[in-house]
Image (cartoon, rainbow, N blue to C red; front, side):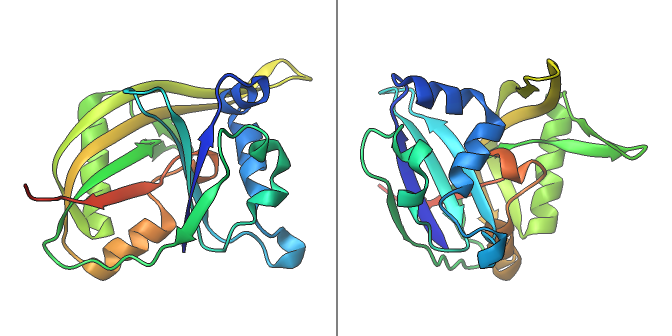
Length: 207
């Protein structure tokens, strides 16, 4: 796998347009990876993060295949500095505690439809279920509601995308290393092609 970090310049008009358009950002990111005729992009997960301390807006991208950011002209023209990426081959051990961050679209399927879970207790239960199935348990966390992620189809004037966005941050424990690695690789929940599902982890450093 590979991890890329791209620092966006929100003062640029094109950058603001990408930030406001989930479909536009998806297409811009996809340009850095092979299309179907060249074997396809593989699994690509990404998340927009804003640092509240300094206002820096970064796009974190985890990919199965090596990115070619020079091909993603629209995105490259929105950056404050050149894109950076590195190979990423994490290894985990049972019982390991890690900081985590996840922007998710917590949903449930009812009568063939996927519905957003609006109450915090439902969202928390959803996260715990994902952990049980994904090789980890959640030790502590905060739930940060981010509202609805929307995009419009200009020619019809109707909303064709409306996804609930929730950010989870906290500490998890690895219960099954192999299953947890698979969760990191494939992402968590729905909406993965639109900026959801990237589970980022970092070691807890002792003082």
